[in-house]
Image (cartoon, rainbow, N blue to C red; front, top):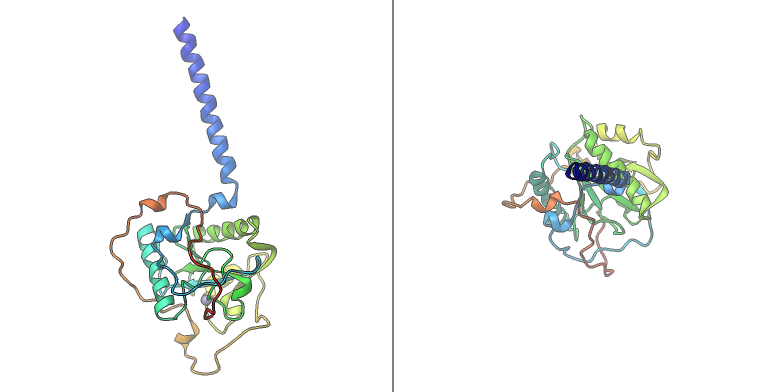
Length: 258
Ligand SMILES: [Zn+2]
């Protein structure tokens, strides 16, 4: 009889603990920041910036959305890492920027890759880099919009950025084309942006356009990132829910903008 009572009591305790843990997990998942699956620079194997990157002076007031990569998005960790590393290499070696141009990049599996991270001036939208976050959806989105996981990751990133004080609550969301004569971020993605309450269409006051030499290819400034092979990259570290890490020098120096 005594053993029966012990078993019953133990079962009740176990049930209580199990329920408690589930409730706790659900409460944690209610935070946008907790929902984001961040992939840190360290996790994707970012190389060091070639020159210092400006620290942002204040919270961003705008978000510019871009498409990055010529072709389909990536849907598994290893191929996403290859693409993000290729984008960084392209930005540094072909564009001559100190680092990857975007603050964050969103992968097809809903992962959020740390580019420059928060509170850094990017190299994504001429005349607006010092007051905005640049978020690139990995892929090309002229004909088809990003999948639901990518869009949810973007919404969570916006909400998390506001919650942490890196983006003002009354921010504006734009496509790159609102500030530049480019087709970026693609018609289909741009159509999705129009559904966001904080979307603000262009042309913005400091809209810019190169004066000559425009071709249809040149209009899409993010289409030409070349594929680079970086060998076998372990993905084990990426399955942890890392927080964003700022790992590079922020000493001021003149940094090129786009
Ligand atoms: Zn762009």
